[in-house]
Length: 339
Picture 1: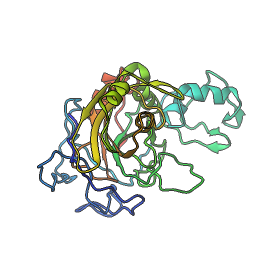
Picture 2: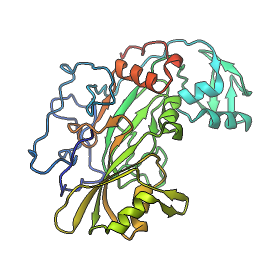
Picture 3: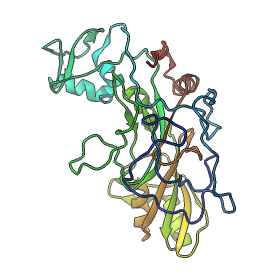
């Protein structure tokens, strides 16, 4: 079950400079200069549990029943990608974090992908050593049989989930572990003013599977609003609200207390449209002043993970996740060693 929350949490400082967490060498992992701001039940002690040291953290098998994952931060280290067997180009590009398989097929058909200086063809296979360019840029290839990496990141307010921003705002990708091949793919998005749990992986296939409507992975949020909702408004939010892009409804809606004019609610839904939670509350005449994602599918935001920090899932946890999502046959080899 996701962690509880207080009735009047203090808002985080957007865009604050990150500093290493206590006891960690500079450059390894990310941490906010302020304390974590996870909601907690009334009466709970202000000091939460400390994050275990990387040396003493054991690996545990992944389990949807646990809200905290015993994982490690690898910091800015590079992987060396060993040779892989020949693979279909669109699948390889997806696993290298460029986009979905369908998007890659569309790019190949449009002539935007080159292999060894020649236009790529649909269904083409490539092997280690082939030079692949997308839109004229060389792509580091990550062959899919390598076990993907998965991060749980506590996104603070004031960061965007994008690498390209005309306004040059802080991005979640700046302080993530760096790799020689592939790149981090965000599982869904959180808008600039929303904080909480964000999943990232090196596998485009895994990211797409986690977002696919077929699997109905529940997204749960802690929502603070100004004022109290009427019973009629609550009923409408559960029955369905007509938005510009279709009907939206909460799978669950719980009151969670509050102080003064502020009220907290706990809501969940099985999709992730742009600003969906905020737009639903606005449709019943209430403005959201604070929004925190506390759960995504089996992953809950660990209470000890402070804003701006990440945790990496261990190999057993990743393997179990792949089994749960029917992806395990695609990944047979272990991760390359961190050097």
